[in-house]
Length: 249
Image (cartoon, rainbow, N blue to C red):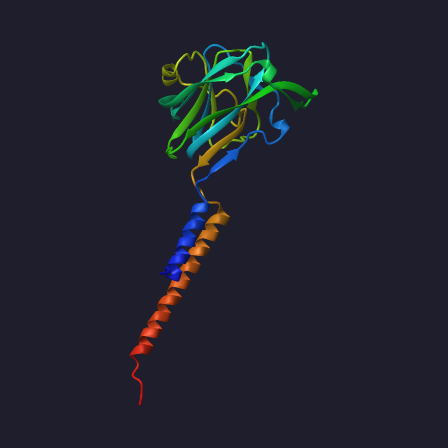
């Protein structure tokens, strides 16, 4: 038995609405090679880099770009994923943690950026994909991914100028040796507003906010569905009225 026509239309509308929201999206801060201007932040004992996220339902992965400035050996970087207190710029509840291994200089790739004075300049970079698979996050909360780097030979790239990642802010803190330190230490903004850490890719599930065109299309679909249902209702009413009209002999 087939569903009534208007119910099939309602199901189609629901599918349309669902397709316009929650889905993991791949974003980047490296839209052009000029996004990077040679700015980076040095690692070292107790230096923590924090990237916050807000209005997200999930964070699948982050691909950071590290910069090698000296030394050839591999180094370990501890990472923490936690809820974040935006009022005091500090971590609260730890959700996940692990260690990522940044390889030796032989695994780094030669990239290039254009200096406004000196022209093209080469640098050694390495893109490390950190997989989180953090799902079912609360879009009303703020979360943070923190890197704790112990080597001054490996830096994290900075993206200056316009804010290419609009769902969070970048912070740094010193004197960090554990997650407990993060909970007790308020980090300060490292650079002017609009600066991002140099991650070449992030895969996130953004909280659904329909674009104007999508919202208009959805409203139009609802209106059309309403008109169809009203038309069918009137037709049934007319058919019922005709059935009650006496037939003359």
